[in-house]
Amino acid sequence: MILVEFGLDYPILREALERAPEMEVTWKRSDKSEGGRHRILLWTEGGDFEAFEEGAEDDPTVSTVSPVVEVGSQRLYRTELGEEGRRKSVYPLLVEQASILQHVTATHEGWEFRVGFPDKTAFGRFHDFCRSNDLGCDVYRFYEERGNVDTPRFGLTDAQRETLVTAVDCGYLEIPRESSLADLSDHFDISETAASERFRRGVKRLVETTVYTDAG
Image 1: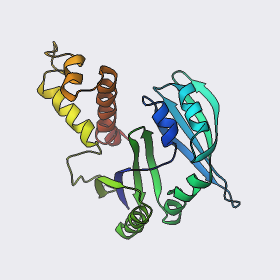
Image 2: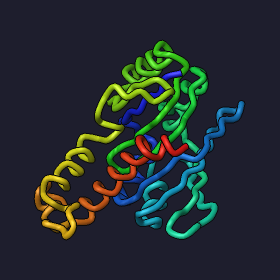
Image 3: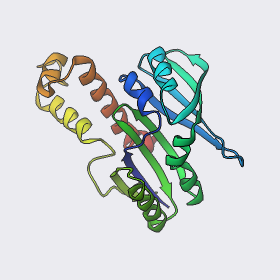
């Protein structure tokens, strides 16, 4: 089996996430019935739940988004895809290719996947589907299940990697700090909140793809 980490220009919940730009969604489970209904369980955190729900009402890819439970700062939602969402969904193809969804997250910047494919041919069919359906697919990391790494990016987006490198270069991680979060945000001409979230998501992804996987 090969593991592939990639970003996907995926329309599912795009409108809802744009309404709540600080929100991060983590896929929990998908269920597809014989009648074509496609339900998804999603954990959400870090954003405005009300804005997310209002955006979901106008989102053409979903027909319902219902809160299930709230735990601390997280809220679990049950979502059912609408016609447009079912047409663009990659889930049926991943199931058909006997793929294993290990980790799937989304923000207003897009979706990121870590998926196990049985071989490179199966991933090639998936990639062809994305291309034919205008779903931009940016591969971050491609390696054998044993964990050999053939790229230094560790699943980071370009923005996350640049933020982490800049944080080191400018002394943001020194003790005591030689620069502030404001300095980091000024460097990228973004808000302090956006800089903080980009930094934290980059650190989280780096841990997940290095020491966290080794600990398992």
